[in-house]
Image 1: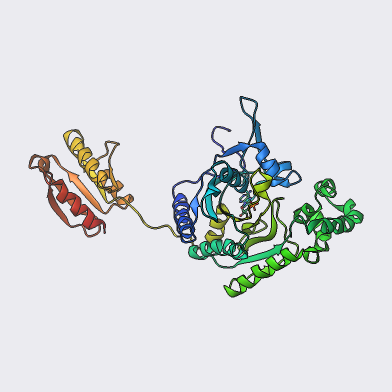
Image 2: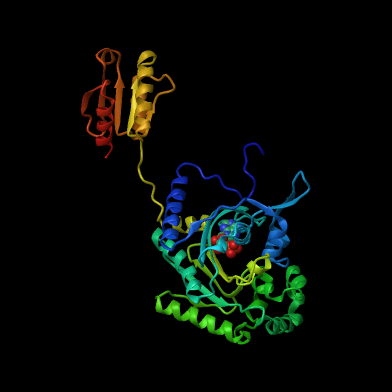
Amino acid sequence: MTLTTKPRGTNDIAPGEIEFWHELEERIRRVCSAYGFQELRTPIFEHTELFQRGIGEATDIVEKEMYTFLDRGQRSLTLRPEGTAPAVRAFLENNLGAGSLPVKLYYYGPMFRYERPQAGRYRQFVQFGFEVFGSADPLLDVEAIMLPLELYKACGLSGFEVEINSIGCPECRPNYRQELIEYFEPRIDGMCSSCKSRLHRNPMRLLDCKVEACQEVLAGAPPIAKHLCADCSQHFSEVLSYLDALGVEYKLNPRLVRGFDYYTKTVFEVTSKELGSQNAIGAGGRYDGLVEELGGKPTPAVGFAVGVDRLLLALKVQGKLKSEETGPQAYLVHFGGETKRRAAWVAHYLRSHGFWVELDYLNRSIKAQMKAANRLNSRLVLIFGEEELDRGRVIVRNMQDGHEQEADLQELEQLAKMVGECAK
Ligand code: AMP
């Protein structure tokens, strides 16, 4: 069973599906380059401490979801559950902030979380994310929302909603934490064990608890707004005014917090109405303290991560994933022996000129080879008959209109041109 079954919560992306991923990856690269982002590739695993410090100890990810293991040198390593902490680590380690600011980086790749698998929630999933280092400008918070929206729109997605909030900075939080503790303490008996254990360690974490039994209490929790310091209030109102000026629709959600400790000021989430309970197709926010927390000098930053699997699910529901009819430019039919050797040579020549060329490897009859060419939707069939080969020629049959002509095997350049013409 384990030899033919993938681990729970993982997916194979097979032909028929992979084309959609390629197209989306292409769009991601295009929109990133329009906004001036460059790609950063980091390792799939990092030192466990990076995530413990970066994401925060009292979070679901660090407490319950990490794939952590000791390597043969007894070092604790963790398969990356998210991309921001590794991006900050790489930013510092490679001294990427030494040039002009801000620095704009994007990443794309698999993330790993030990979560309960369901539609849209996997243990290995793909995130595309980006980070901007070195500026606290509220316009960058807004661009961090606009870039993924551009991507969603470019894919043809509709029916998504942006929710936004400000969760302040370390200066605003002590009073808010106190108010939360006072609100939750008399109600904590009816809440889940995670909430109980986090109440005094990190009361803001309770706000993004997903346990059903906790939702009623959470709905009545006090919002942070009145505790925001002057700087955070001012920053948030500038974010909102840029959003208005740029015509970005959003909904204020005073209870939105995010499952990571590193966020400061603006946080946002985009949901799709096409998806069920796992409806977030991307989320992000500002994290002005993280670079310093991980050993760098104070560096404001903002970022966003898109769940690529979920985005494709939403596009599928909306019927936006259409597979294009493809097929080889030429299928080379041969009779074995010398004809096969010549066909192999011509296949090699045409492939080196960039054409998709197929031929028979199963010693099938001519009829079966023609059928295979048809099934593959090949534009042309080149027939390597013995009699034609003796004259140094090959038959070229156009599969669309059935028209046949001969080509000279001494003039392969001519043949390639012919294949190119028919392939248009
Ligand atoms: P997060 O890093 O938790 O803020 O998640 C950012 C985005 O990644 C979410 O909005 C989802 O679209 C996606 N995502 C997070 N966890 C998973 C998962 N387990 N499976 C699939 N997608 C996920």
